[in-house]
Structure formats: structure tokens, C-alpha cells
Length: 473
Ligand code: ARG
Ligand code: ZN
Image (cartoon, rainbow, N blue to C red; front, side, top):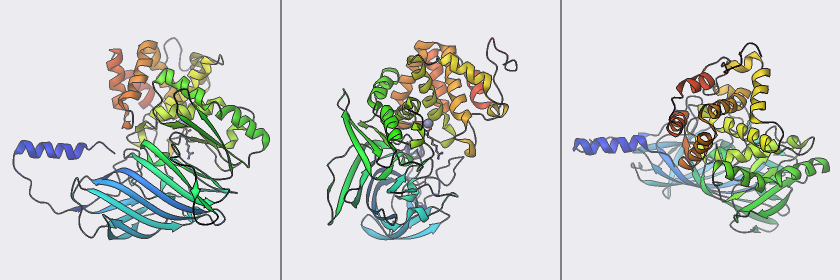
């Protein structure tokens, strides 16, 4: 689902002009969506509304087989279109008819239906495939992680390519059904709710089903397959909480992980009191096997954590960070990857707010500490346009949060928190960019804020702070 500005404008012009446009020949869809950082991520010419991903996974061989069915609508007259994918494709059907397909670059699957699809027409695309995801390299690496007991499909911005064909860009969100058959005794975790308990598959196998009811960016879809202990809870609001802990965790890691992730419902309730209603139908967290993952990810409704976060005891910061992303990053997605500070700056600032609330250091103390201690090269990265190689740099996180703190000081607490809630509400289940955030901040506060954002987001040097010399500290 994506805002169809181009199509709408074209229709408006046609109506205004009164004349019917000349019948143009259908043209190929593009291999990208115009993302300045990742020009060949996502594809143009269609808009996906739903993915049905139905797989079978053989843990011993890291082998995946199955079918993804995509419901989409053409946004132009299409002679062919691209999907982003790396596994081995056996067949593609478009609207029930066999389509031909070829590969381009390291992750493009080019599909040519037997007859062109016209603008506005819905397409049902069925891709049958198989492969060993851990054998596939694209964008210079393998995002799929094979573990001792299964696998993790968790990554940003690249991960979908290794397990389902997609329009792989956060500006085209869709609902998901994911089901995976695995040998008895293996668990499968994914996003959202379980519409039914695991069912008997072929002899010795069980099929697990998961459903995401809200539009979800492709990189926020995940799989965790292996030996997991699953815990369940229900929030006061009646939402399902499903957490999972790798059975491979040593006892001390498991205890520290549970002392953090079992508090997910509390964190979500706390977030709701600040950011507005929790945007999704379910929640939880998954803690992977030791050494399997070097980061955590805000996978929609159910974040995935590296066990490393729980090395030395409970870690509420990471739980707060990933759950804050459910509002900022997941429900409100980046329209382009350069806007990543709208995710990371906000999730980091949530950690500061939690810290203050827990009596562990105020937001001002955290700001002052970072302002005083960050090395010179930290200030050379502008969080509002960090560059493709720096989307996860400390500046995006910490200077992004510092930007929000300066904004809060400038407009006051009432306007600042109203702004956060309005932002989450206005862009719920959608996507957004920084210009829209600045415009909303100016509207809510009645202040001119261009200079503040210019200094904090877009200038590759250390901004001055009133009463503090940038050089003195
Ligand atoms: N968005 C994640 C977080 O802030 C970070 C993901 C880092 N990804 C990576 N491939 N290193 O929690
Ligand atoms: Zn983050």
C-alpha cells in the first residue's frame, strides 16, 4: 500500500484537460522506487496489498521450499515487472497464467505476464521456489542467519530477498500471512497473531501460521526457527503477548533475557501513555541463540533480540528501544531510507524518557553527557542525511535523540508530547518524511523551527547550545 501521487495527478490532469489520453503501449515496471540510498530496492509499477508466504523448512540442510502469493495493483500499464528475490524460482503465475521470468543484478526477478496488466488492475502473483538461503550472497553479504538449531530471517534493510519475493521497500507496506511447516519439535516464530495452533502436516511435521493484520514493511517481517521456549500473556487491553527464548541460551542469559523481555507489556503500556495507543494487535519479543545475531530489530509486533544484550543482566533499554519503534519505524515507516533518524532518533529518545522515569538519569543529563563526550567525528555525520553507509551510525541514534531534546526545549513539554502523539496518529499504518515532521512541529508549536532542524539534522558539525560553548565542553 503506497500513496499513489503520480497516478492521482495523472488522472486529475486528464479530467481537467477533458480529452482522453492517447493509448500508450504498456511499459516495463522499474527495478527501484527512487530511493536515493538504495536505488534498486523496491520496484515501480505496482503496489502490494498482501503477501501470503507458505513455506517448508528443513533445518538440517537449511533448505526452504514453498510459494508466495502476492496481491497487488498495477499503478501503470505494465508489460513486465520486478520482484526482489534471491532464491531459485521454479515458476511464476500472474492472474492464473504462467509468466516468463529472468534474473537481473543480484536480487531482481523480472516477470513478464503473457498479457500486459492495465493500470489499476489487480494482480495475483504466485511464485514457487526453493533454495538454501545461507548460500545466497547479495548486496555483498548473506542476511539470512543459519543457527545451530534452525535459522533467523532478521535484517535491515535487506532480509526479505532470502525468504520471500517482494516489493522490498518500506514505502510499500502490506498485510502478511506466513506459514512454515517444520519437523515436529521445532518452533516457528513470526509477526502478529497465530490464527490457529500448529497443525499436523505430513507425517512428523507441523505447520505454524502467523498473521499480521496491519500493513507491515517487508524488512519488518521475520522468521525465527529452532528450539524455543514460548511464553504467553495478555495485556490489560486484551492483546496477545507471545515471547520466545532460544533453548540454547545458558541459564544466566535466559534469566536476564526474561527479566527484560517478560516486561514487554509494561513497556508497551508505558509507551501508550506517552506516544498514544499501541498501534498493533499483538506484541512480544524473541531472544535468539547465543552468537546468532549482532543486533536487535524492531520486527513488527515482536522484536528480535541478540542474546548479547543480556550478557550482564537485564537490559530494559533495548526492550524500550525496540518497542518504541513499534510506533516510530513500524506503524510510521520511513518513506525513504535517508529518513532513518525518524526511527532511530525517536527510539533512542524513548530510552532517555524511560531512564528519567526510572530515576536513572534525566533526559537533560543524558543530553549533556553526550554533548560533552562525543568525539569530533561523531559530529561530522548529519543524522537527517547520513549517507547509505551510515544509516546505523551513532549520530543517527544519539544526535537524532539530541535533536528531539532540543526541539522539546524549544517548544515546551506540552507541545512536544502532543507533537509525538499527533505524528504517530496522523501517519499510523503509513509512511512519512522529515519535511512532514518539521511542518507538523511548526504547526503544533506555532514556531519557526527551520534553523533548529538545519543545525541539528543537516549540518555536519557540532551545533551550539545556548549557555554552552560547543568548544568548551
Ligand atoms: N533498527 C535496529 C535497531 O535500532 C538496528 C538494526 C541494525 N541492523 C544491522 N544490520 N546492523 O534496533
Ligand atoms: Zn532502533
